[in-house]
Image (cartoon, rainbow, N blue to C red):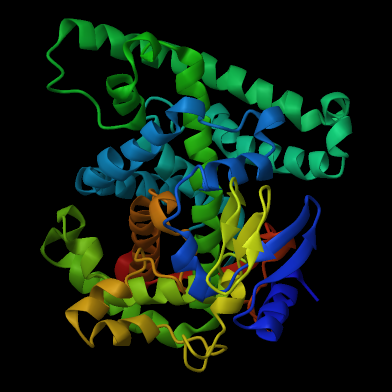
Length: 451
């Protein structure tokens, strides 16, 4: 039994009760959806997301932490990146078209493609266009570094968790990935140095009217004066945002492609919507276009419901907490919510085991409130794949547009199916996370009118 199914079974056994599970880092407390609303508003000095993530990622050793710039980075993602989506999406479309033209098979007839490796490169390229700009986002060294940094951090975390905490100050030297992380940061600094220097010169001799729209520039403008030219700060923050975005976006994109292949009957309806919204009247350039892809939005949310995170809402108790049901949470307790189990609760989602691509599209037709409540990026206490409260993922709007762009482009231009005789590919379970298999093949055929 894989980790996801085991967690679902535990959730179904305990239902609305608080329960504990044993993990590599000790006991973790699992809270039901009804208590998420009670906990998500607590301040950081009582229930901390930052400390929980720092512990989970072994930041003391991996250095995976934005430090005192954490709130600034989240603010820039939530404001600058989200507000510039209208200008960014056409640039991402050009990146995708270039990548498909240069690295994707022609697919004149049904052609098997190992989707995960291609998808990972696509997401890295598209994300890089928004984060570091066109100077290096296609550079192989940058792509490798931005992709592998997260892998090195995650692998180091897993290895460190198997070393007793008291032995880690010495045991860390046995973890080769920690050395690789330092190398990743060194490479990032070398590649960003000429860009940062050029940007700073341009700012000195111009009024900033034609400043680039990317995270490098936004960081320069927002960082304190003493850090604007700090190469280490820029490199570490760029790698952190890449690590936080590339693999999570790619994982969901891969799951979406697998479900498109497994349920070919939904392709035509999604294709018709994408063509009508994006190809007619040059919709790729319009601000509202991605929001109009309501059926695709529903499809993505349903994929995420059934194939998303195993757990979510990770927190660490900093001061004793008394819950409304009488549960006492002592200092140091790690708190999680069982997202995979909640997603299969028939009280929240009727016929929960069935994949219904338009489940949320139909719900959104009920009222204006429902239309907002069931969007892919919307949060509630029974849908916390993006977290909850003020620490909910600020980049979910960018990720949503990025995934929609790729899916819409593929639907308009390709038919997609499973290989003959094969079932829908299953993701691999790694500790408490999931990852698509790099060996999974799907078949693509270019649509004749798209040639």
